[in-house]
Length: 443
Ligand SMILES: NC(=O)c1ccc[n+]([C@@H]2O[C@H](COP(=O)([O-])OP(=O)(O)OC[C@H]3O[C@@H](n4cnc5c(N)ncnc54)[C@H](O)[C@@H]3O)[C@@H](O)[C@H]2O)c1
Ligand SMILES: N[C@H](CO)Cc1c[nH]c[nH+]1
Image 1 (spheres, rainbow, N blue to C red):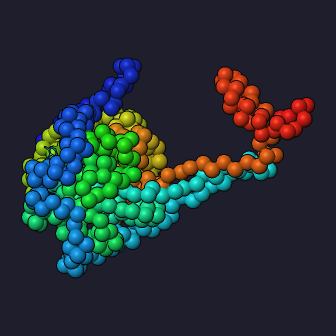
Image 2: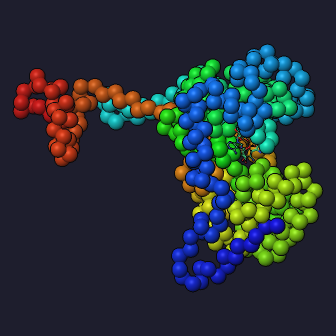
């Protein structure tokens, strides 16, 4: 069901090893999806609402109703009929997210560089955001919270949200998603999914005004649209098909490791589930556990496809040091450390979307209720991008405030550096401010 990649002994040869290539990603990657998604984005740009309605009908449960904005009354009605246990779970998740977000909110920083010379790093919330909530294979109500809570904490003034229309729900997003919107006071919701939702946000289409920033997870089409439209609109990260990597040794419980791999393979046939271990015993036990656990799952075909894909595998390494090099090269969305002294190994991880430390921190805790965010970079983007947080919804701007005396203090350096760059006009813009000063006293 899951292939083995044996990296033991490769270091002994002395040839440098490309660990990122040794553990490949899914066959259907963002590059391959670009032509199809480009056509979708162009259709939305040129034909607007008409194209969205066609795409909604082709890919999702969209109806001919051209009102893609969900009525406010429908959103509040969804909360009234929400199962109380689900509501309690959402409320606890919101409480934990708000607690971390409040602490992570960054404030303005002013540095005094001399008398009368200050630079302030000012944080300004993005004016308007478009949040994407997946709803193709599963209605990810938790992604409503993961998007909305940090945006609200940052102070974003205008929040729109989109999720695919569901055939079973009259062409509306899933009712639990609408209920979560109501719980958080979000009343601008669009029944639009996939790449067309991202294009709608970026261009401003039909009833939806263009946004400044799009955030949220999604499948390969959503991620590809974010890559294509980045620049026209801001994006958080490429948060695509889910990945889990478990770095484990003999102290790990095979049934737990297997369950965690299954939990993320369940998302998408393109999901990646990888175990990295120096233990032949654990590798065999986890493979055996998968044979037992997978047939008993609800989404057995999806899980089998994900586990059998080129993106999944059990990677055998010489020791945990080599394992650490492998996981740092891979830069997984989720990294679990199930080893002795897990916190010490976790402290040495440089590239991961989120790190789950020890036996009691499965990824699914973070998916729902840890207080961390589950919108995380995939495809190796964790090497340069971060998971969603309050910071993603804030822009920062340097505010430069110098008095005449403070400018005089540094003027000679500005003039010298401007001349070194053969840009004397830059220097003159400083000199001119001191034209009234006697020539021998000029800065
Ligand atoms: N990285 C993260 O932070 C994170 C978090 C949660 C979920 N995810 C991922 O989000 C994804 C959710 O995927 P999903 O499919 O369930 O929901 P989704 O809402 O992301 O995608 C559904 C949309 O895909 C589009 N689509 C489907 N087939 C298409 C095709 N052939 N051509 C063009 N467009 C097509 C449709 O427009 C549909 O609305 C999963 O891959 C999951 O792993 C990632
Ligand atoms: N595991 C997903 C992040 O890739 C988030 C999620 C939502 N619901 C369940 N899981």
